Image (cartoon, rainbow, N blue to C red; front, side, top):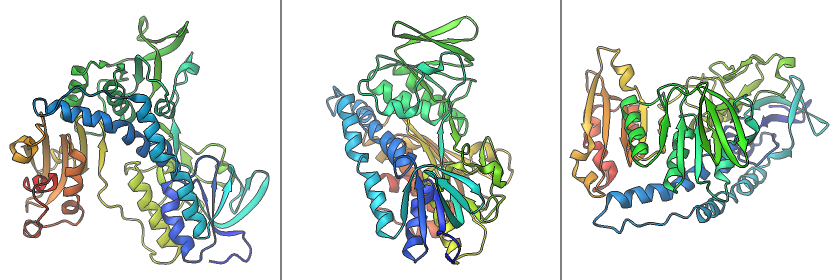
Length: 445
């Protein structure tokens, strides 16, 4: 690349995983790179997403495990919300500086502020024009907000993870990842939780029979689930907040969470003026992650795509762009099998072809397994676990979904068989450490 007429070779808008995983090795190869960021360096995942969430959820998962091991372990655990939130900060607060140092140590220029395109090679940040030969838009997403009367009393996911004191009554609107995971966390720490669903299905992208088992487990833990709720407005009467729905019905709460999804950060970038196409689902790209302006690319959750909008997807895209910009590849992006999980109790995890998709294909078979039939699953006295494995006619694994306390670990263990298209003979040559959850997972194949 040449910087004869531009300030930088590549300029990234946003500093999350869609940026820094590829930008750092790109700059290390001598490419002149800048990153523009208005908030915390590292973006959503390290600061107000994955890392923070799993830290808050860990005590709940432990409490569930102890409860299931009743008779072997004293089940009377005292979960402390304030200490857990403080621990969350111990885990994540150093990450922005750590990522900043990694970028700067490799020669990346970090520019604090918001970037706005004035032409296809120039942005303005803090009133200063900055040019680049190539741009990568990696601005991520932000929590969606219901546009309803009284919405000013409703909170988002970031506010939940920073609560100093957990409210006694929490109402969560939405039953996707955020809604179901935060219902699990809040209930585990002792809040009275109500989940309000727009339709009659939660976690729509996951196997519904497994989702219903998660809902049943939440209900047994005291969570109230209201299906087919059309939210109309919110009100606050001397601190007692109310969600009004279905014309004349209402739910009272001390705190309300809007978990109705996330929206791509595409506004205020000046995309219309330079001809970058996007819609409500994100920026439109081709198979090379190019936008409708060929030297402007996109990475991470801001992209409109069928692949799951997850941190590993953003990392893969960022590294792909690094290889494209250095000439290591001139081929279109080919996504691998991308696993996903929801951190409820129990967890649901999946990868590859789903049971629903497999039912539509005559050449695929579905194997249903009660995982508690494996002796290792009884070590921790798990009370429920099931998976469904999808095979071709030659018994090649092409999909897996599981519900259990360790579903994410099982799917991680099975992932190579799917992505590398291992044959039964090749699988026989894999000897996992025994006894472990990984060895238990492979015994089902």
